[in-house]
Length: 67
Image (tube, rainbow, N blue to C red):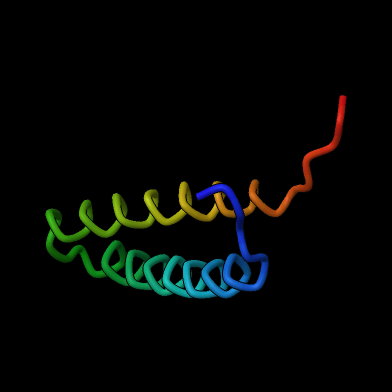
């Protein structure tokens, strides 16, 4: 994909950030209640994947400037 639609990137970022916040809240509740360790790890892994994806999309928003 050589061209990126800035509006689509922003829309996708908003969705990813919302999911990331939701997972953060869910993880905090699980940690407080001492719930299922396997599910806890799965959610933390998903949260890290989202963060990586968010970082990549944010880097696409930075314009290329000649050195």
